Image (tube, rainbow, N blue to C red):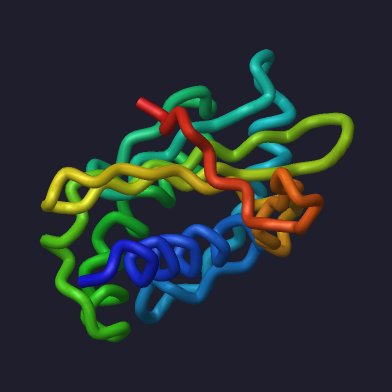
Length: 148
């Protein structure tokens, strides 16, 4: 499976959480205020691991901690619905960042071939962050240092 397609699937899944209203869990509509939770903690971010269902930086009994296992369980079906194998992913981690200049999130995936990459998306609408190349053209911002 192409790495970019797997990143797209991870983005679509994470974007449903970032948007505040998620329909990816069958028979459930889940309200998630992940950026409000991120802003409320001292570091300004929450890390969610969608393959293990664990979080870092979230309140222990908060809505994200209780919702993440539901998302973890829904991800294999989401992959199947989009024509990829869940086993293609060996890592799927998202860092949701609440900052004064706007919200963003960084998606890091690793696939079974060992390739690992991170991409940054700005605002809760999930627009791919851009940068200028050497010729002044706008290009997607691909992070060189993936999340660990």
